[in-house]
Image 1 (cartoon, chains in turn green, orange):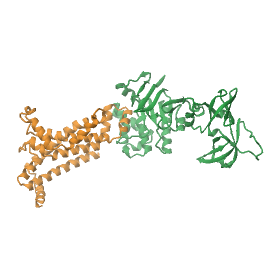
Image 2 (cartoon, rainbow over the protein chains, first blue to last red; image 1 turned 135 degrees about the horizontal axis):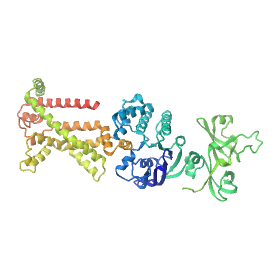
Image 3 (spheres, rainbow over the protein chains, first blue to last red; image 1 turned 60 degrees about the horizontal axis):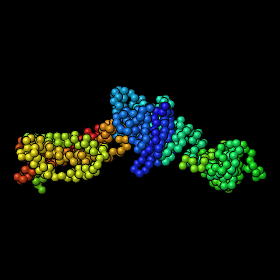
Image 4 (cartoon, chains in turn yellow, red; image 1 turned 90 degrees about the vertical axis):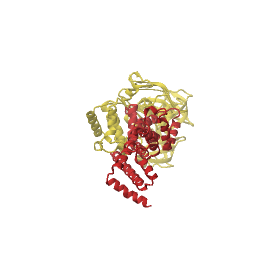
Length: 368
Length: 228
């Protein structure tokens, strides 16, 4: 049974509808990542789940019990959770007092508080900062205080709202490490909102994609990244090649899709005549150089192979993003080294190849 | 201009000699204003928090009224209280007129708008996310309010200091409801006004200096508290 369940949740701020009939169940011990662009409603959903806000419509169940819309019970339930906000708000107190707050509010004994706080400060690497004024800390340190402040409560549920959005890469790595340690050691249920897909992939068991107030897809990382259910999700998870086409033939699960007169083969059950999007991840496209210009086909297990011309090469750290024209536009991602070895540059002739299994077909107009 | 210089030297003399009459009047000023300030703070800080943290119809109007009352003339408060407390007035039975208690009440009324208004604005200066964060960490409503007050402590203390300053420096109300009775309701400001009227400028100025000195000492003490 789900530890937290929301049913038909809707919420508006004034005229603006933020959440639109959302259903979601989070299991005990699960690490769930809520991904979606800024403004999709992630924060609002987390705030409602933490009982900081009362939803406009819909119900919440915690540990099988219905959560009332007001009353003392909400405080009791809220005390079983902790929330880490995007921008850490440290209180104008010492680091120690910041971390001790939640325990004091729960009426814990003074010496137990001291033990717990010292232990958690050590865990987040702030043991030397005990008496520092929390306001004088850097962003990364402040976020560690916020994390310590939440973790010291040993919550059953930890809600994280873009916990690393404002941090530099080193602080981000530290925070991510801490979060995954806690999740593993204490079997805490975690719900994390992030716009960073790799973070979602790395820290969670299951991902939900929130777009425009709707939970459009939930599943494990592979499902979401390989098989998005609609065009919007495909865009969001980095399917840079989304081609419009029509199924013209289907031979036992291998569909031929006509894209501007070019035929690509894809694994799909859609029948002839179906209008679809063919989605190809840029890293699934291989670029080959025709040897001697004699061969017209390139030996490869890939079913799709198109003669094309490089139009642009951009370097992205260790990778190169190659834009090619093969009658339709494709984007391929190759390592910078291989881009150099193949001497890829604008005007260069290449073969773009990809497998039929590398093409994900989405029905046009689905989930819109 | 020699009066000012003479006043200064006189002030030093009075202080060094610990002139009993001056000490008594200064002590009474301090006691009455500190009591008024303390009582008003005990009412206004919680009440201000209540106003700040609750949404209700007419909140904005209420805050406007409170802020307007910052400039209520001290004599007007005195007059209002005089009517209330006079023998034939509605609270005449209490026989409070021309007592230090009446003066404390007068000063409380005088500084209540100031303390309320400044408490509200001190709390508005604390980011809403602070209260939110506290709530998400399991603070009850009153625990969250206490934390926000703590966050605003410097601004709240400044409000209290300003309230005390207005209380100890006012003369209109103290004169009207206190009556400037020797040995009973005479405070520094009423003596200054009396002595100046009698042409005793030197003594009046000296007393003014002593009042400022008193204020200085209190500020130093409160600032020390603040830094801890």
